[in-house]
Image (cartoon, rainbow, N blue to C red; front, side):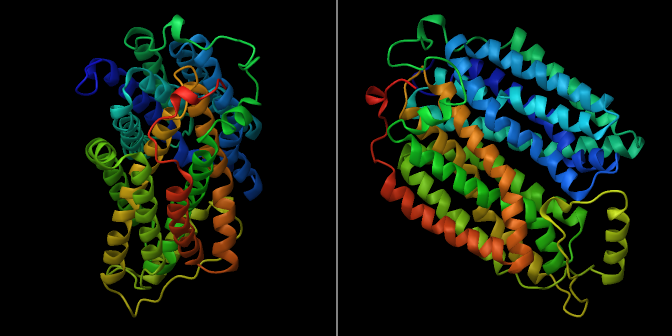
Length: 450
């Protein structure tokens, strides 16, 4: 490891396998409701398909992370990637809704690729460079989220067979297995692995979540991780519905908004997060990130109700009818949407939203790598897998409940409510972070075993 920065020869394989893994996953994500609807699923059952993966991760990821602390990163990465590969094959072969759900559960229980890759990066980085390295996994994730949906949409232009995108995802998953087998080098040698002792974890079990949460300085970081993810994933889940009611945007327009968000996320995690964490420290970067997300959410809520210049209400209604045939996005309930009138068309509403998502995207690019870096600095090297696995499970829990909470607010209070309330809560979390996160950068020496 170079003292002046990241060892690219060791970091690049981890970046590459995360990217390939995410690419496979994001080919499937935009189509899950179609897989469910193909078997006559009800709105509740479609919600079950969407929730199966994050709910399974609540159980699986912490235990997989703890196992990687005990047996090394490479074997657990391989187990995780092989089961992900199997889950995609299962999805391609599925002929019932039960098999669709089962494929997501298998991937969720054993699919700890991201958390284990982050633990591997923590093994080979100094505290000074860790936030930058963790940001690179976020960048790989962001790039995958840009290209994965494009690949799935292109594939479906040539065939109506939903098995094809699943098999394409399996191919990318198989490539990640090859990368791990032949390129990835173990980052946690046997002499550095956690060993059972009188005060250590007597076994790998779901109780690892409670043990990690109880570590000094970790609990508050996990609460912040969960809370900000509930709010930000609510933004992601409801933005398309919001822009439809405010700006008359349909699929193509929203795709461009999300593309902008993805590009900013990648830029922040490649170019900004390393210098900022070194200059200000992760504690202040967390507060900055929360303030930026707060500002972006509030600005989004205040987006003027002005449909874009090419908006035609009748055409939008027809498109919605066509898109709803045989499928639905009713994961968040039976929300009735009012389309805007044509009389107030203009560019102002779209321009306002584009400005709003800039600070929000910058903050989103900063927050998770900074929180995860702080967690590793408050634990020792035999705990990285456990700590980052629990962190990922908190993200999964947030992803499972966020659309439900946001959808309820959207339906019962109004379209702006999830964004305005979320923005105000984010501002409060920024204050909490400054008060509750200890200013010291590392508590490793004092950290007991998890």
